[in-house]
Image (tube, rainbow, N blue to C red):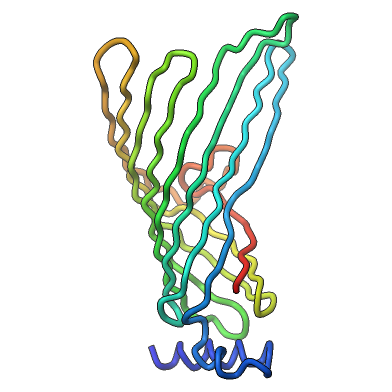
Length: 206
């Protein structure tokens, strides 16, 4: 712990020698912000699907190498026929809350390895059928972080293991539930983003 403390302190002091008091603590006490923002549109000739994701994440380093964070946002998707007039055939809206904890290990210089555990909780609604779908999961994701400067890092990670409990409450009929466990670190297809989906992003420190 003391070794990690000193490594983090030296690394940060090399970026800005005028902030010695703050940097002597490494990352302890620093806030950070990141998240995911995306928009996509797919037209197969007969229908068009648009989807958007907005999940900002903020966190706080409680020690030089441990941070707590939480992401709150939404995912929406809508499919319409391409005829005139168009017809909505599918539309969903999902609210997401995801607390997380992350532990860092220095690899030397500005490179760090981390292990992250998160608890994603989703609350979704099918706007066509009025069905409600909720889920609670556990996700374990290792990754690497490169500190570009004192206020920005570039990170990449993949999901190594996850377990999810899902409940489906239809507008008509009985509720159903499902529990799944997945372990497949070699599935790096970013289109599925289930297990092993490679994630690359930017994090800002302040």
